[in-house]
Length: 443
Image 1 (spheres, rainbow, N blue to C red):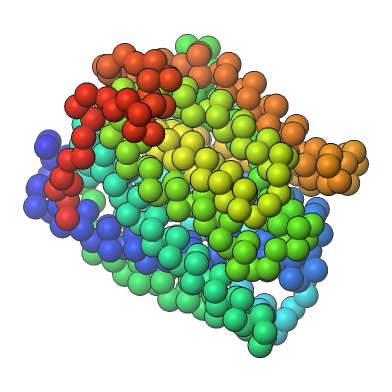
Image 2: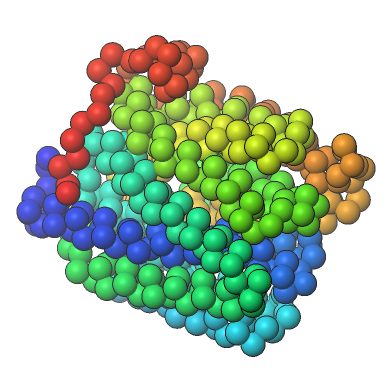
């Protein structure tokens, strides 16, 4: 493996080992928070409009602040400094969340502000972290490594989510606000530990050139000739169509279907668990056939997910629907990340990741706001307005998923394969030759 800059192979392997340990605790924080912000907002008396804002505003504001992420890295002179500073502030933002739960401040707006601050801190760290990590892993093994890493740490998220749901179910009989205070307190501890590990990692030096500095406007002006710009627009449009409905799955389960916290956790976990069971396999296939082929295969299937919820709302059936959701999202997510790493040179990677996240955050925000305001105005489908929203989201996803990936080009040499052959290989019916498990050398 070619070592970046002045960093040795031993330092790379040591940093990747530390990164994995850091990931365990940051994943535990994610498991204790990510899927429980909406339930806590509903407990505080939040409406469907509040739920829309909870999804929209953190994405919007976090995406806008990321426009300055590359400048912050240049000003600090280090991606590592950027990551550690904002991860520390992110952990601090969990303390007032604990206070809101302990003092039972029934203010949905206050809680949304806290989630915005928490999300912004994490978002300011993400582009620098992505650039940093992509320099530590050779391009030939990114699909395998990041797939393995996300799968392994994903099980930590699943375990943390299950434990959090169990704790809430128990604490609901005693003091449900105390249960959320416990969740946010644990999340604070996990994030502080992950911050300590981040400080121990080595950073390859980053070369900076004048031609690597460009504005968002200059980036968008190259839309017609830039493959990467087209890719960003495609993913943003798909995420817009997804987030019209995505924030309201929790509302359907908790408010309309009257699921308890434990059943809500089980249904939600089915998707998350499947993602991390299959993401490494998707990554190995992507290393062979290309990230774009996986994206072209999975993007249209994402459009079918809301339709499955329209067909039936039995909890056992919804678990099956969530398994399908996790399967297709695993392939799409790992390959969109790795497509960026392949398509952008290291010197431009922080800036391009920031612009990618900015446009996607704006799309997620717009989708959630439109969904939140449209929901009360929609006709009922099978007795629920939310299902009408799901149908609209599904149609948009299918159109975007079928059309836009055709406009993109793969950025590296890969083997040719049809989408149906890739799908059958993924589920084990017709395995691809030479796609096998390899030993990860970084641990």
